[in-house]
Picture 1 (cartoon, rainbow, N blue to C red):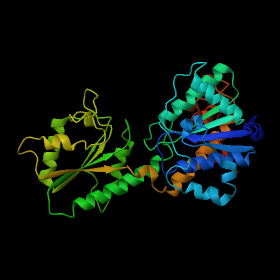
Picture 2 (cartoon, rainbow, N blue to C red):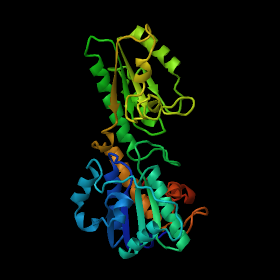
Picture 3 (spheres, rainbow, N blue to C red):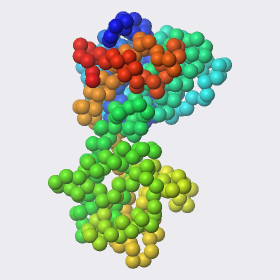
Picture 4 (cartoon, rainbow, N blue to C red):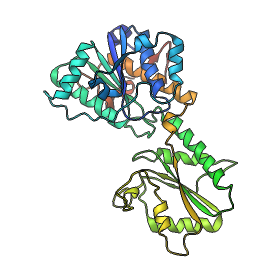
Length: 365
């Protein structure tokens, strides 16, 4: 692990792991990576927060050391889709000393003799771990708090790509190819809009372009949240495409907005229902002569987080999370308190110290 970083000193006596938000295809691989590294480094036990920080507040804690008592069980966990521990959407309040929620959490950490907390998740989960770290610093707690990146949206700061994104991107490319094949099965002029997850980032919507190949043209249009939606331009382009082909395929990110920053799906006058078809709305209101044929909507990526993971993404998630545990023993850089490592800074730890993380006997690059 580099000069001055002893693996024995780096690993606490007891670790607590949990996850926030929705699952990815490799979130269990991330959990397995944390568990394996803790076990091989001599941690006394590994606890699991069922349904994240919300479950911990309810006392829902599992002893992972007892549950995963064989290598076979750990390998099965890595390949299991969805989330073994479950997740939550609970948002912690501002970290103010004396707050009842934080007092309860730190009492629980003391009861279970937790020396390190590793939280797997995306933006909201990194916010959770950062708040815990801030509160821990304020009260002088020695507990380390580390964020383990996980999101299909691929929108975490300081990351090139996050565990879970690769699996979801592959899923999007596959299902888009299938939707395109399906639309060509009928003698019917149509426009198909596939709504794709991704929050405010267009990585997953952009992954729809991977459907293009020798056997498939891929989507005809991709609507990205980074590019303001122009209804008139959109209709002109669809009209031009319909003159060229029978079936038009559009991949639309769920985060598409107009020039005023309003979500497209909130402009339909239906009470702001978030999960209704996006671009079919301006299509259905198009002037006579511009819109030809029928329109339909398809939801893509809804099952992507819970699908079976590709081996490369699963290995990446497991290895990445293992290095997060090792970071518990790293010296903390200037802007981060000695009481805890903020989730947003953990991604930079290796670059800051120019020491590659170690996983087993091999360096991970």
